Length: 544
Ligand code: VG1
Ligand code: CO
Image (cartoon, rainbow, N blue to C red; front, side):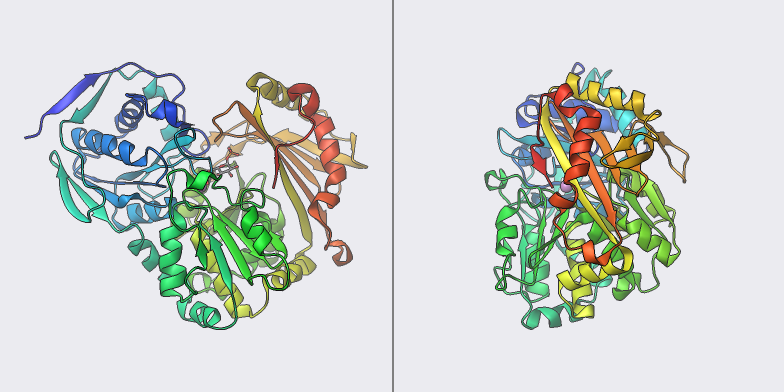
């Protein structure tokens, strides 16, 4: 028998999970007993896991390997029977979700701060996923947070480190640790969803693709699936080696941080298709030649063309989008005669809709797209969906998107992020908007009229749970929309996100630049919230 040690501890302030798990600086996470306290609090909030299986892995960022050893000892001491661990500590978020489902695990712990920078000065994160493979719902994360405020002991075992690079079974105390290939099960899942033969035929021709893994977790997945299984020339996946600091970059697939790829997609000699994924592999960016497909448009295009891939041959039951995501997909849902759900930001809100079969396809403006095959957004899945679609339609990305706009209208869209704000100012800005929201109706704005404004609250149509204060929505009479909310994933001060959307039904006016089409609305949005007055900022730090 291995000795289980109970170690006294004291609560550590601030261990509250945000939009997607707990994220803090590495410096904070690596100070013992930070991980111990949080993970013990997760276990203390759960029931019935004795002898059951836990999935464990992360995006390979700095401190991943150390945190894994700590968590294995805690899991053993707390009575888990088995841990399925991604080899080298690697599991993309969607692959972890799939493993939980395939192996009927009790749950999973994913080590990632996703799109946040890594390295010793960067961020680290821990997220708990439940038995359906999805992020723990708010009820669970709040229980965990409550527990972090009361915790007075954690349990661990005195056992040597596991060799996480060696496949197969080992033991940590009484618990079995099975080190598994992080890619195999996920690749098999993808084979069943898409027409690999058809994509292979596309890639054998003159079609060229470039996938930027941003030195994050999707590298091994992209090399195996896109290059080895689908025959894209070797080197099609760039920056494919996961690095603990993501090569010093910001593993956020948007035109700002993936500028190298965006530059390569310009001009007649550019590849036909470009894509990128984020730190933990759940986001996707889609590019055609000279065209960035906004994630909101991508969701709408995929919804409109769902029947062209094997997974959705029978159509979609419904779609869902996070509240700030553009309403492009709403128009597709209306045309298809299926429901469209509007949820708060964060993938955890899609879980119930997917489980209940109310929604099949979901998306977020932050480059998250996914479906009912797992319970997380899925970067490579979206790339394969696009490739399958391109193979079926035999047209360029640009042609498909333009055709979509002609049919449904175009939603010009942008997100302006004001990062690293002083918290008090950012909160006062939101509070002021909240107080005025009810009185904005009828007021003029950017040459139009405000048709209504509110503080978004959500009632889950499946279990009736509620989430309030999810962002201020301001809608104009012409269907334009502004949304203001504070980020729940940052680790430096506060980040204000301003989302701007304008609908353009006239095909003659759909080829403009977003920045130009939205300039007037953006100015008006800054003024309406008095961003400069509350934050001292005249301009956003990032526009995507
Ligand atoms: C951001 C995005 C949100 C996404 C979340 C997690 O949250 O806006 O859409 O679900 O990141 O994505 P926030 O609260 O900072 O706006 V990931 O890929 O970082 O797990
Ligand atoms: Co992510």
